[in-house]
Amino acid sequence: MTEAAERAPRQSLPPIRDTRRPRHQLPAGSTDCHCHTFEDTGRYPRGKEFSYVPAPAPLSHYLRMCETVGLQRTVQINSSIYGFDSTVTLDVIATLGRHRARGVAGIRPDAARAELERLHAGGIRGARLSTKVKGYGGTELIDVIAGKIKPLGWHLDLHLGGVAEVAALESHFLKLPVPLVFDHMGSVRGKEGAGAPGFQALLRILRQRDDCWAKISSWYRLSEAGPPDWPDMKPMAQALIEARPDRLVWGSNWPHPNRYQEGDVPNDGDLIDAFCDWVPDAAIRERILVANPARLYGFAPPSGAGN
Image (cartoon, rainbow, N blue to C red):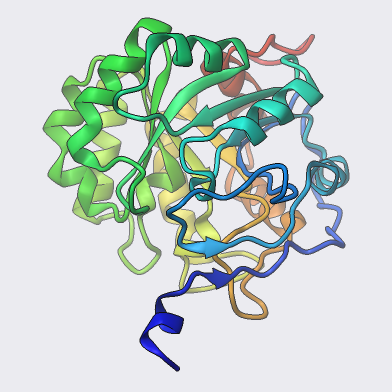
C-alpha cells in the first residue's frame, strides 16, 4: 500500500438496519442528544478536511431506528466531514420541526454575528470544538469561540481526544463564561477507569459549575469489554449519575461513524438497554432522557414529564 493510500480517509461501516427492540420502554419525550445524518453528497458536499468517509445514513433510516427504540426528539451534531457548513443539520431541523429537533454546529473563529444569528434561527444551540479532528478548532480557540457564542446563550460542546485533556484544562474550564457540554463522558476509556485523573477532574467541574453538562454517549468506542453490556464503562456512567444526575444527557452517536471492522457497529437496542441497566431508577432515567435535554436545548417539557 502506498503512503498516500494509507493516509486516505477510510470508509465507515453502515449502521445496523435491523435495530433490536429494547427490553426497556423509554419515557415520553426521550431525546437523543448526539447523532449525525449523512445525506446525498451531491446536495451536501464534504469539506476539504475529513478523516473518514461515512456510509449513507439518511434521516429516514435514523427515524426508523428512533421509532423502534422509543426516541422522540433529536439533537443533530453537525459532522466534521462537512467542515463549517451546517446545511444538512439545518435541513434536518427544518424537516422535523423545532418541537422535535435542535442542532450543534462547528463555527469559524471569524464567524460574523449575522451568520451565528442565522444558525440560531435555524435551531442551532451550541458550538462544537474538537481537539480530535484536524481543522475543527482546537483548545487554542476555546476563548475565541466562547466569546462568539456567549451573546446567543449557546453552550460550548467539547469533543476531546482523551480525558487527560480535562485535567490539563480544568482551571480554564472552570472559568469559561459559557455553558459547557463534554461529549462522550469526557472521552474516558474503559481501561482508564473512574479513578483516572482526567475523569476525576470532570466530576469536580460538574459539581462546581451548575452550567456544565456531560453526555453519556459513544461509550462503545471507549470500551475494551464490548457489547452488549460494555461493563468496563458502567463505573464511569454511575459516577457521573452520582455526581450530577441533573446535568447529564444521553446520546446514541448514530450512525456510529469511524467503525471499520465487522462487529464494531453497535445495535442501538443494546445501547438503550445498557443505559437503562446502568440507570435502574426510573425517575433519574427520565431526567436524563427528557427533562435535562429540554432544559439544555430549549425543548418544551412533555406533559407529565419529570423536572
